[in-house]
Length: 238
Image 1 (tube, rainbow, N blue to C red):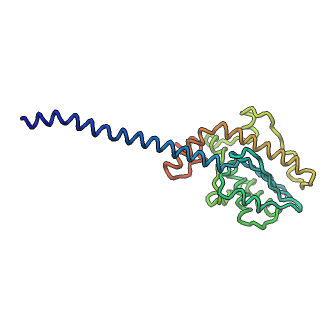
Image 2 (image 1 turned 90 degrees about the vertical axis):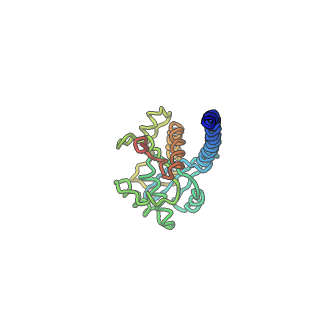
Image 3 (image 1 turned 135 degrees about the vertical axis):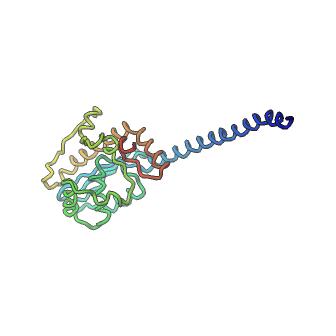
């Protein structure tokens, strides 16, 4: 009987000691998780480039906005100007962020990377297959990390154009393509084409800022489950 009484007195203290241990571990785990999350987000902003591609029969032009440097850089293949290898150097190890880029821009860039000496005309011909609805063959073999903001904001199978997304966000400057897509680009057209391209990037940047918290959540889930969930819609995440 005495032994039973001793056990009943000691037991609560033993339970309390055991209960305190996981709480301390949990606090340490939470702090570690915050550090890991901070590191992931720092990587996104250090490596992230918002981009957009324009391509004509005789001209390829793409611009990038660096989240870290807050600056633009444009690369062109047109006439005697060929900046493709400078482009390759820039995107190495970066995270490319675009709008509908899974279906178009990523495919064009990936095709250029694979066929690095391809002509603009051949690249344009490939781009037309994407515009006409063919699946981006590089979707699951892309050589760079990629976010598609359209996939993040889409609801079900609904698709909203970049311009309409800009209108919904009350973006102040919505531009139509300044040069007919069937026309060949002259040197005099390049400035207008670049300004249009940069404006599309600025709309994409506004969308990025609008969904930034959702992107941060996707970074957490991607790390936790070791699956690429970064460009899935909310229903896709569910």
